[in-house]
Length: 636
Image 1 (cartoon, one colour):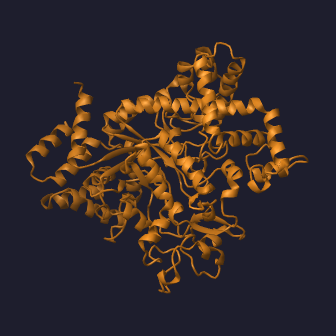
Image 2 (image 1 turned 30 degrees about the horizontal axis):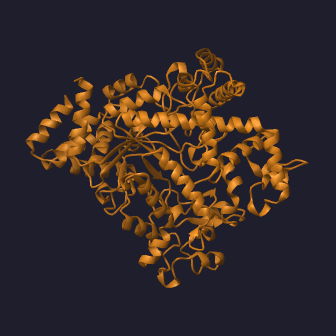
Image 3 (image 1 turned 135 degrees about the vertical axis):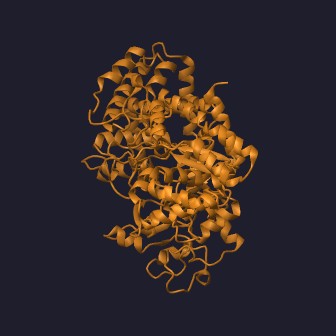
C-alpha cells in the first residue's frame, strides 16, 4: 500500500472516530485547475485538471465535493448566483473531453489550435479566471463543433440519436431549452441580454413579452415561429452545447462516484435575465426579494430577485405553474447530483420582499416585510392575503423589528406545513431520487426566522455555522461551535468570507482575536498546558488557523466543509459580498496544485489536516491509548 493511501486511511479513521458524516471540499467550477493543453482561462469540473484534483481531494480524506451553481453567466457578470436555473454555462465545456469522446466534432489538431490561438492576458496568473479568453475560446470552439455537426459527416449515429432524445425529453416538460435558445438569438440581435433594453422598430415590444401567457396571442405565436424559421441553426447550436454539457456531466459524475466521492449541486435563490424574461408571469408583480438588515449587512441587501407568486403554488388541490417550475428544476438537479445546497432557504419558506418601484432600493429593502408573515402592515396591505399567521401571533414588543427572527411568536402544525411547502417538495423529490436527507444543506447563516426554524427543526434539516464569524463574547451566538446540532454544517469560511489565515493575520492583537484564542485553548488543550497554548495562538496566526480548522471536528455538528482557499492556504479573497469587484469569483486552484499544496503546508501557510485531526482527537478522547496511537501515525 502506498504511503499516501495509508495516510488517507488514517484520515478516514480519524473522521470516523470523530463521528464526522460528511467531509466536504467546497469549490465552484471556474476555480478548478486545468492542464496546460486544455487551458481556456476558466475552470470546469469536467476538465482533466479537475479529475486530477478530485483524486487529490480523495487522498486527503474528503468524501464530498460541493459545487456552486452551474448556470449560464454573462460576459460581464460571472457570479454563479446570477446564472440561469436550467441551462448550463458553456464555459464549462471541457475541450479535452470533447476531443477524447467525440473526435469527429473536435480533432486533436482543432484542440491544439483553439487553446493556442486565443492569447493569454499576461497580467492574469494561472490561479485566476481569464473571463475574456474563456468566452473567446468557447465561442470559437462551439462554431467549429457545430460546423462539423451540421455537415453530418462521420457523425456517430448513436450520438445523433441521443441528441434527438435529449431535445425530445426536455420539450415534454416546461421547455426551458427552447426558451433559453430563443433568448440567446434575441440577445445577439439586440446586442444585450437585458431584455428591458430591447428596442427597435419592428418586434421589440413583442420580443420583450414573448412568453408572457397573457400576451401569447396570435402575434406572439407567429413571432416565435418566425424566430425558429430564421434562426433554426442558432437554436440547434444552443441545444447541441447544452446536450454536450449534459453528456460531460454524466461522465464526470460517474468518475466522481468511482472515486468514492459525492457531488453536491447548488440551487441559487436568484434568477438570471433570461429566466426572468421567460418566466415573468410566475412572479409577484410589485415585489422583489432581498435580505433585511442583519449583523452581516446592517443596510440590508436589495438583490432585485423576483419571488414566485403564491397564488400560483396550487390550483384546485393540484400543482400550479410555480410549483411545476420548482418541481422541474429540482428533478433536474437530483438527476445530476448526489445532494443539494439550498441557497438562502428563507426565500422558499419566508422570503423578505420589498417594493419594486421605490426610487431608493436600500430604503425599500429596509422597510420591506416577510411575504407570509405580514397580516396587518399598513405600508404593505397587499401582503395580508398571503399571511399564514394571524395578527395575534405577531410580537407586540415595540422594539421588535419586522425582520427580527422572533417576530412570529408561535405556529400550529398546519401553519408550519404551509410554510414548508417548497422544502417539502424538495424532500419528497430527494426521497424519490434516492437522495438522503443528510445530503440536503440549508444555507442558513446569521438570521433564522421562527417559521424557517420550525420548518427545519421539524424536518431534521441542519443549518450552517461559519466559525470565523463567531462572537466570543456571546455564549449563545449561532456561529459558536458548541451551539450547533449534529445535522448542522460547520466551516471556518465560505465563498462570502475572507480566507481564515487572512482573518487571523488581520485581527491579531484585537479583543476578538484574544478572546477566540482563549476559547480555542479551552477547547483543544488540557488545563495544564492551556496558558502556554493560548500564548502561542496569540503570537502565531498560523497556529490560530490550525486551531480554527481543528475546532470544526469537535462537534456537535457532524458535517464539516472546507472552502478551497483555506485548504491551500491562499490569502486572496474569492468574493467580496454585496459589492461589484473585478476580482470577485475569479480565484482558482493553481495548475500545479500538488507542488503548491506541499510548499504551502511545509511553510505553514496551509493547514496540515493530519495535525488538525490529531488535535481534535486528543481533545475529544483524553488519555485514550488507541486514539493516541492514531494521532501519532497521523503526525508522522
